[in-house]
Image 1 (cartoon, rainbow, N blue to C red):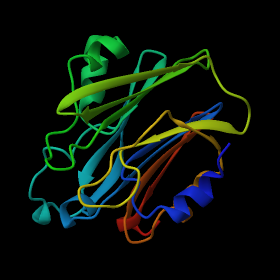
Image 2 (image 1 turned 90 degrees about the vertical axis):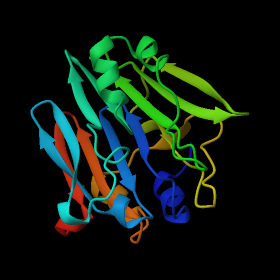
Image 3 (image 1 turned 180 degrees about the vertical axis):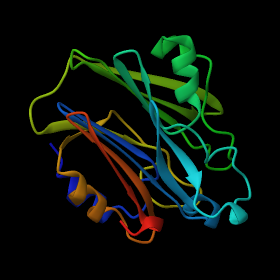
Length: 210
């Protein structure tokens, strides 16, 4: 089991990440460009959405404005893109993601990462990424996890040009408190963090002084 805080502190740019534990889920976004950094998380009726902090500086909303978190009945969808809405429309995690692929942001081809959390404690993770010019769709189903333990998946392995896609299975990690996760993210690149602990949601936004 990896020390999640040490991992985050040593990795300047995992990009966007989802961590799922027994009683909590975290989703964070980071940014290198001005457009990516110009964002905040805001609450919606059934989850959260990304918004431009300064609308006058927004240049291309296509891959940065979306609903990362939405409820679907008694299930919770968490993703790094507009596939959140696809999953909600289909009502089926795998069938929905079979219609999607990685993001069209050559040369990075950013993977789409997604999670579905169920009321019984089970959950699924997925990553859609480009391999040899084609979309590789990976799914990981978990019956649950132990107290204090979780599973983490991100878009990138770390910084680079082009950015290297996440490799391997989701990492097995310890699950720290939300404030510690926020503090461990690279101070220059972090943008926002969604934390849901036992149903209590807290949002962290760098632009709002969190």
